[in-house]
Length: 278
Image (cartoon, rainbow, N blue to C red; front, side, top):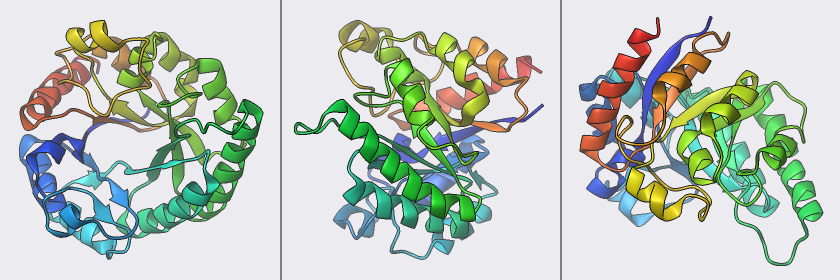
């Protein structure tokens, strides 16, 4: 039986205009065990000024490793989303993310297939996606890094097509980063879907959806950036944890919410649910 951990995706501090280091300290003070930072290519003004939480992959990855260790935390994954259907972006981006993850100590890099291009057919898209995953997996697997494929866009929010993406490359280093909120907003039953692919899980985004957002957007959008506090919305966290509890692999519930107070309420709720499941 694996372990269920609770982490914070640093998107929770995005609108607070704080730095990566501030976010790590904040997560530790709330009692989170893991964090999931965002990484990006090149240089970006707000990050360089420490008004944004994302870290450039041109920085020293030990910047992340040392800060996380200083606050007694661990990394669950890197948020390294790129568009798999655009190999000119995804391939080199994910190769760099794998090298960066190995040095900073993150076991997973998360990504998704990206927005549908206007000039490609569906079959052409799947060829492009396979190419990107294949090239990225070569670098990731050599370093023991897993690629978490998230349901977030045109194809991956449809379970049958998500399965097809997951099976394009047969590798133990390619698995599912299941996002409860995206699955729900896509019109699916996230509990049933999670149960069907639980054996492929490498990471989870714990994203709850408010009743208001559900009423306004369910079945109309391709996922959402962040959700509400876990426990404040429509997701059945007891059912989620019941599926995770018997799994052999360790899984981190990486909270994806939008504000600091939502991060605080989320860990309080999830801790109770996880403790009651033991």
